[in-house]
Length: 248
Image (cartoon, rainbow, N blue to C red; front, side, top):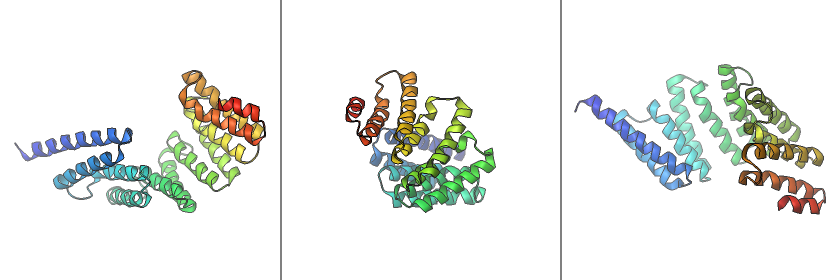
């Protein structure tokens, strides 16, 4: 067997291992997923060297697993390693780095390090806007994430502004009240509830529920959180009979 064939075989094995790891991550078997990713990474490093550009996605995925396990400091280390590889290959603030930069922002958000989170999200957004233009669909998730941080900080007006910006992008891309917009719509309802604007909160939650029912049918399991949110708003208003009806 020639050298090229050996490397091709190694690549095929690595692809299989990555697929196994991806399945395990998707099904919540996180320790096993991490082991498979690391085995694939070790094989790749033996074949192609440490911190090769083609290993960056695996390194990023190991960071995702650590994040899912609540091992946030470990997740940051893996993400930063992936980011360093991307920057060495493509330069600072290249579009290929944007996903990893966004992921670092997610971890800082989970840790309650909100200023750091905003900074990393803004960096990811700047890269995406330079690559795709302002308010492109590829920026919508990061825009929504910035809204999430402001909501966590209690900066509700800022949160609403960013959520509505993300929603507008989805509506331009998919049309009004598309299922892909339901997360933002639900988030806006949550913020209005936190502000004590209960009628507005109910209106937005009911809009989200209507979209889900149109897409999946009445009593779809994923509608439960929105129904619960409606019940919570009624409870906050002291409308306990309506709240009980919503919870049921």
